[in-house]
Image (cartoon, rainbow, N blue to C red; front, top):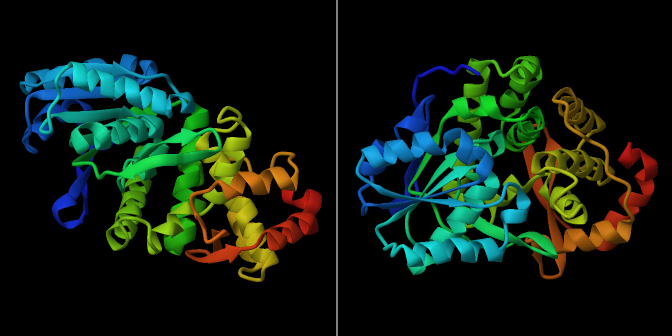
Length: 370
């Protein structure tokens, strides 16, 4: 995929934790100079997986070495199986053995799993060392690399163990999207659709008009959705850094989505696919509760399908789904707080009782899963 070389910068203003999100084709070859602008010591650990490492590790390492850094490459497995305390410990072992210091950097080169894992290790080592996000998938570029959420999965739930640790810099090279498998590219569109649903009706309409171009990875359209998604994510994070209130809207589609990932052992669905199903089903629940119209739910479902994303709830028993949903981090006071749509561009947070969700599940029956 060819991309425009014009540089875009989105600022995340969080007092002393502020940082820039830089979006520009070719940034992989500039990381050394960009890090020099941040200061710090001469050690950098690049955390990546074998797939991304083969594609981009050499270029990143060369740029860092040319800028005078001593580089340590740390490989973790591809996929969700790496998001564990075991692999966090493995990264920490390397940092300790190589005598990293508080002024040393960790660079996360990869998708959301690598970013979450590397950021969590950086948050723990020496009570926190700086790290830089270099996301290479659409999901990580528009979502997980921004906002400082880091962590790993637990057997009973996704992202249950973690810390808020803001990156010092986010470097997004859209050219990396050209090597994504089609399934991963399409899955990333779920998070993009989410931003339109929670915050920007005009952006949602843009996606409706240009989904064909996006599926063809038209460079100008891709650059626009990455930039706009980062702008929305940044604005929400700046208002509520630690998810005490407004930031919770970013979890739209994730209550059901995370439950489905957990039920599938993090192997059956990739994250964006689970979020797509989650958004469709949570809109169905909102319709059941009278929060949104059928037209809103149908319009969202139509866009999800146009993107080639799944929208069907896998066959499951209500008891299994509810149990998995209860392990969600949004539980408070024994009640599940779920983000539900009111209209395109506006959502609300609703506390849900088990009986209400069970009633919805029973009322839609097969319709919720087809």
